[in-house]
Length: 241
Image 1 (cartoon, one colour):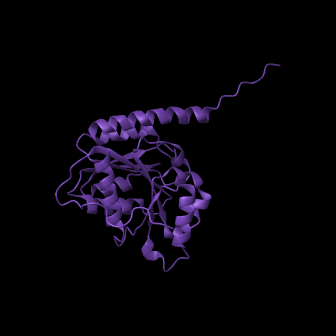
Image 2 (cartoon, one colour):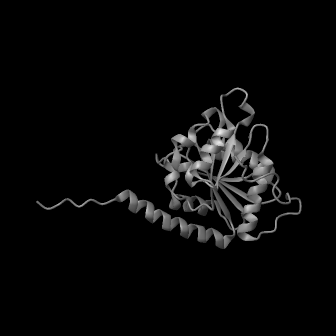
Image 3 (cartoon, helix red, strand yellow):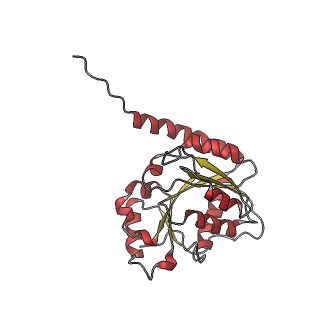
C-alpha cells in the first residue's frame, strides 16, 4: 500500500506569512510609518490604553489606528470620536490578523502622512501570537485583574512581544497581584522585554511608555518631531528584577 503523504500546512502558512510580513515592513519603511501591534485578552484595556496614548502623543506625531475584531465597529467609532483616523477590520470569525489582513487595513487607512499606526488586534492571548502582522514592535497588555500568572500559561505571546504594559495598576490594592513575580515570569520568557506598569484610567506610567515609543520611532527613521515632544525617555526602560 502506498504511504500517505502528509503536508504540514500550518508550518507552510506561517512561513509564507512571515515572508509577507517582512515585505510589508519594507513597504512601511518606505513611507517612514512605524507600526505597532497591541495584543491582549478581552477587557484588559486595549482601547482605553490607545485613547490615553493619543492624548499623550497628539500634537507630536501623526497617528492612525486599525481596530480588528470578529464583528462590530464599536472600538473604531470610539477612536474616531477622539479625532483620530481609524479603520475597523472584520476578520470573518478568525481570531487573529496576519500580514495580508494588515496590508488591506493599512491601504484603506493610508500611511504616507502617518508617523505611527496602532493595531488593536483581536482580543486573544493565543492565536495573535503566532502570526506576524508586519509590525515593527509587538506589545502585549496584561491587566492586574487577570492575575500575575498569565506569563506562565501563555508562553508564546510573552516570548514574541518586545514590550509588556501591565495595565490597571490603580486596582492593585484590590487584587492579589505580585508585580515582582510577574516581571520575573516575563523576563524568564523574554529577557529583553521592556515592562511598563501603567493605568489607562488614571494616566499613571503612560508618559514613560509614550516617551519610549517616540524614541523607538525616532531611532527607526531618524524623524524629527515637534519641538514640544518630550526629550529622551523618562524613567528606566527595563526595570531590574
